[in-house]
Amino acid sequence: MNILILSAGTRNKIVQYFKKELNGIGKVIATDCSNLAPAIYEADKYYITKRITEDGYLEDILDICKNEKIDTLFTLIDPEISLISKNIERFKEIGVNPIVSDYDKVEMCFDKYQMYKFLKENYFKTAKSYIDKEEFYKDLENNKITFPVFVKPVKGSASLNINKVNSKEELDVIWKQADDLMIQEFMNGQEYGSDVYIDMISKEPVLIFVKKKIKMRAGETDKSSSFKDVRLFELIKNFVKKAGFKGIIDIDIFEVNGEYYISEVNPRFGGGYPHAYESGVNVPKMIINNINGVENKEHIGNYDEGIYMMKYNEIKIIKNK
Image (cartoon, rainbow, N blue to C red; front, side, top):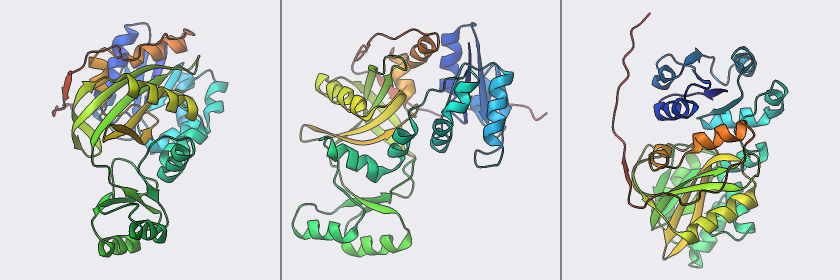
């Protein structure tokens, strides 16, 4: 079995975990558009590719799949998820089964207002959100929402261009600086992240890991502690089944006054996934099982509470050839 990890970047641990789980029964191939992406050097073999926006990129990936006899692939960056999902049939035609949700589900994840509407329509608690500034001002006057609020792009990732706003004056200035913005209620509570695997055969959520976020950096969890709550597990199961996700996803959740609010979904490995793996939550093994035609049994909450993750800097040294 050969696995292709696209746009590996700095996600060294993900490459290491898949190599460990394959244990010599196959190869891990990695790609990136830069030869200074440290994760590619953890793989059995790597390719330096074009940028995903360049003409011919998809064809190059398809060629890599053919040449390396790839069985499955996934990407670690958001823009490429849509590209893979949109072209999933082209991969299946050559015997590759990507670990990715359907295209419409992926696009919903990347459109924060569409996700908000889905959550509201399906009776899941979530932060109030607005794309109409005047509608927000009306609710503000009627005391349905208060400052501070967050203003963020409707489409975006890595917590880029997010502003905490405390007044109408600030909001009016930011609103003029960019299009396609939304206003979101400030959630004053504990933030959690959940790594979830939805079996590619049964389409059932079979693995859930929850971490209490202690510190964030550049949109990713920097320090966290493992957390368990049966009520939260049930909420997550209901949500992912209603939404129809597949494979690995990462969910952001807030707890405010004892109630859980679903915030955002990343349809890929989250940056904090190493916390789950090191706590015994083995998504790579489940992916390998599915590609081998084996349906995974449920392992929800099979880990200890109070396991802490602390990220720290490491370096990779290579010699220029």
